[in-house]
Length: 593
Image (cartoon, rainbow, N blue to C red; front, top):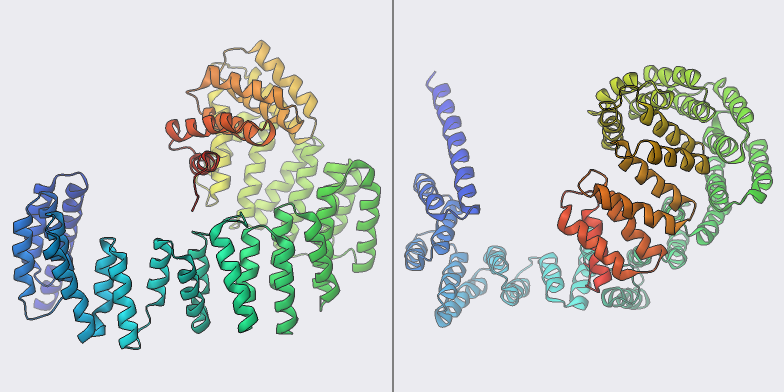
């Protein structure tokens, strides 16, 4: 019983201390140093072995300019039997705050001398120097400790060299480190990313490439080729990256094409279709299995679809048919068939054939997930063809088939979207209310956005005439009938002027003009939205769209900078804030880390 009471006492004491610490730190952050100090002193007195509490007392005193009190506390602590060399640095810093440079240097040197007698102290001493930005002293600490012992402070030194702008030293240290301990490769790349940019002429890019090439010539190691490939990928130079990956593949001799496949995917995502095609052809030629060859052909077809014009459509159909004849039309090729039937329905316009193909595919023994993917595409095509009720049946089947999968949540969202297209806003809203708590942030955000459109435009318009028109324009956009969608949106802007729906209609109209490459009309539409709805939810979206237009389409960087800046200062909680800040700094000519 006593043991239980003692344990409970310790638990309660620990909780109370943690709460007191949080309160004191909150006071400290708010600048209420006297209140913070009072609590820190109590915590330190109750826990004399806790150095962190003691240092919080020192920091609070320094903020209050109680330098003599902080000095006395530090000197007293230095007289303790247990040696804590980094406290000499804390004392030196306390003297620096009083501009007593001779005393400051004296205690910094005392700390450094501890490394001479016992390199074990180097880590804590080095960290203390780093804490106050004394990087030269930290470097001296770590380097001397490595001379005197087997301690490895390369990772600390590499990071500091980077902060000092000593790029060659930084890269050298990281390369030495990962040569000995390959586990640090991802850490090195993460730190390289702070200095390397997309620009091949950037100082850090040049320094790293030069060093890696020198290393490859002097001491060939695949790790250097891997890092060189990584560097070229950062520069989006997929041709040079492929040269390195091919060299690695041939040296390894294990037939593993994983990294080359990943490179092909990156090139496709970055729309470098020429080099992607070259890489994928290499994959097909060297694939050891039928499945790997088929995957390569799927990538080639994705590239073909991305780059096709209508006159190429018959050729694409022939390519798909040839591949399916060669690799079968069964479950083994279901992904290729999904790509084919998507093309048939949404690009080529042969909806009947796409539906027939998918129904045949469903007769094969597919896994539950694969069956659900096929049904999802089938339902999407039915919505495209305005066969809403049949589409809803398929979406509902998916929800039952893969209950706990994100695919089921996606199907529920599409039930809501289809109901919205139909004008059944009440049922759509019921589905969306559930999806606002979706585990998929993307689905939850989409659900929230559509829910707001429905709720905002159902209050003042009881018959929801404007909302029905907007939903119609949304459907026409999905059906790629952009000209018809524009006509409907213009109808809304003419006959429902001043209603809640107007800002949504303007924004969608701007998007459609962009899609049709009618840039001047898009610009005018976004400007109108900002003029009348600059306090509403779509204002940051409109500013961002305008900034992108001015930067990429109209080649007016100064105007682009103006709109990015507006987002930074007026929409701090916008999803575009980080990107706007980055773009603004680039346009201003700042060095971006």
